[in-house]
Length: 247
Ligand code: SF4
Ligand code: FES
Image (cartoon, rainbow, N blue to C red; front, side):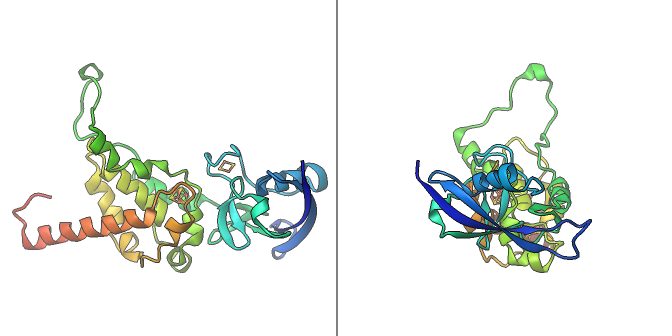
C-alpha cells in the first residue's frame, strides 16, 4: 500500500478562545485510496483530538462532510488525495458562519428548506383503503433528478448571489420546491410559489450556474431555477392578460 506525505492546512477557529480563524498545518501520511476525510480522521485520531468537522456516511450520501478544499466546495469523502498536490488547504463551507473549525452554522439553510414545504401536499384526501397514488414512469421522470439532493449545501457555498444576498432562498431549497411542484400527486404548488416565485426566490438568481457545477449528485439546481422562472412568467401572463385561463 503506497504512502505519501501531505501537508494538510486546516482552518481552525474556536469562538470561545480565538479572536479570529487561523490555519494550522499537519503532516499526514496518506494511502493512495484515501480521500480528504480520511486525512482529517488521521489528524483527529493521531495528532489533534480537538479538531472539529462533520461527517457520517463516508460514501457521498449523508451530505454532512462538505467543506472548501483548495477553495472549491467539495464533499471531503469524495475528494481523492491522489488528485491533489502535496499541500491541501481545507476550510469550512463558504458563505456560512463558522461554528467551530470546519463546522458551519446551518440554521439559515434549514429555515429556507422549511419555508418551501419540501413534502407532498396531496391534491385530495384519500383513505388508505383506496390504495396508492399511482404514477407513470414519465410522471416520475419529471422530478426524479431533483430527489437526488443530499442537502450538502455545496451549491450555497458556490453561489455568488447567496454570498451577496443572504436572504436568497438559494439553489437546493428551490430545486426541492420544484421537485414537489412537478410531482403529479402534489397540490401544494401555490403555497410554494408564494415563497419561490419572488425577489428572494428565483428572481434573485442571475444564472451563473456554479451551483450545478459543484453539485456532487448532478441535481442541476440551476436548471430547476430556470424552469421555475419560466413557469412563474407563464403564471404572471395568465393572471394579468388571460385571467379566464386556469393555471
Ligand atoms: S443541489 Fe446538489 S449541491 Fe445543492 S445541496 Fe443538493 S446535492 Fe448538494
Ligand atoms: S460523509 Fe456523508 S456525504 Fe461525506
